[in-house]
Length: 288
Image (cartoon, rainbow, N blue to C red; front, side, top):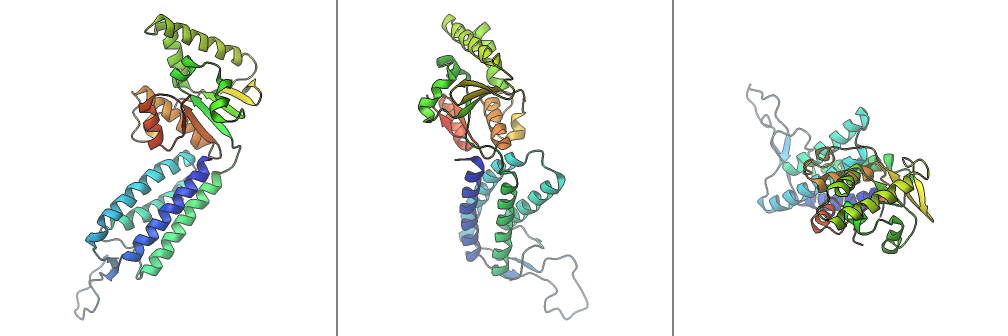
């Protein structure tokens, strides 16, 4: 499934949960001047606020955590956005988070639940519009193999058997290329060094077929290109660590996913730990 379509589907689920939660909430008047006949006037206080409901605390907490997780993925497609787009995102995120956190003094709380539901619906519609704004370009599969996958199977055209199609683009990202060179020269065994040397020779042979920055044909409809961009993992997802090789690879794959939201980026790896992290990051993986 294309990344942008997945985001829209997840957003619909979050919206349903949010509206269902609002239906169980109550709004109360918190204006300290209400009914006051004295000469003292309180300034700066919110007129309306959320009525405390201990039974909804867990639901609010889970929804806020899931919303934050979704937003971290959504922001991948808006990295480097224009200031006006960044402002739109900030306004929507702030509203949805505030109404779940329910801290005091929030002047945005309306007088009735019906108005709150209408505002939340508008906020979710805005997020959908922001996805549609960048949901353009080519679809298909973008395949990112890890180093071990290339050591075991340097023929990237063979991935078609597991993918079920030969129409995909294999992208070699900097962390994998660096690791291959390292394994070629300093691999822990002779077999590893030979396998790395074989993979490097094959990749160089493909690179020489044309401009590998834009893609060269491997076989049939399978293409390959080399990615030159290095990314800082914490800028992609805040829980990624720049000192961890797997996190650098995952960050590179997620950067591609954010740049090509209508494509399905697939990580090729048999590493259980990397597969687990990919699952958390909503990145599909292929185990050859």
